[in-house]
Amino acid sequence: MVDQTVLGQFAFRNRFATECARCSVLVLADGGVVRDDPVHGQIVLCLTCVNIDHDRHAEIRYVTPGAAQWITVLVLGFTRRCWHCAAEVVCVSGLYPHRPGLAAHRLMTTHDEPGRGMALAARMLDRIGRRDITATIESVFSQTLQADTMAVLCPHCRSMQGNFFVIEETTQRYLTAGLEGLDVLGHAPSPTREWQQIVHHPDLSWMLFGTA
Ligand SMILES: [Zn+2]
Ligand SMILES: [Zn+2]
Image (cartoon, rainbow, N blue to C red):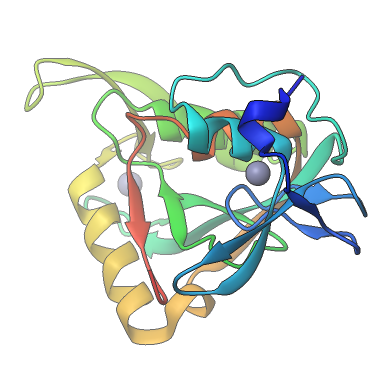
């Protein structure tokens, strides 16, 4: 549990249910803490994010008291032509909450070098039965990195679709049209803890947008 020294003696509880400003998990009425934020004014944080504010290495528990136990996550991406055979390939760009909190300005991307983000996106797509996409995501040995990573392979000719091109097109689409520039590949349910671990993971990569 969150101890009283972390909460502060005069911590204000939220009167209405709303998304946690950081992790976007739904905080029930009276379940979180109201904080003053220099950019957003008053924000509501769930008790897990309060703990992490206080100690970056605080444990993320299975259940955040006073918060929902699941969150809906958008898996975002786009379709492009395979560089080798020109067949259509669905590429995964990243993960973002369906109902973002006030200060949720990070698109969690799927192109960190070890492929962690891609593995997480694949897990979420698998959960909602998008086998058509997950069947194209594989662990491969990258000559460039000299290490294993995750990549998208063309469903037709099995050519690897370079992560570099996926990053480039994700950035282009975002700069042109914002999140609307990306296709929603699925709405995936994620246990609160899984999503909080993603949001607060020190080694996952992300793209910042909106007002930081
Ligand atoms: Zn939170
Ligand atoms: Zn191909």
